[in-house]
Image (cartoon, rainbow, N blue to C red; front, side, top):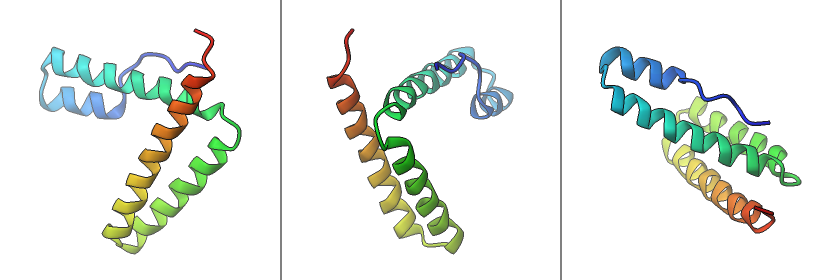
Length: 94
């Protein structure tokens, strides 16, 4: 399922403080690309469960105020997304 192209809370707040249409449009473009990556990687077996676990660990580190651990976990999470996206494109039929 593809998510609709709509402004996020980030884009809306950005536009409220800096009503630059081109900047708001670029934020929306980036968000839409991220949604596509999320949609592709979520279909990989085990990826959704892994993502939930990664986010739980990240939020726990943030709640404890452990910035170093939160940063490390977030960097690992982003690498896992990159790896999953590469795997998803390997199975692409487009």
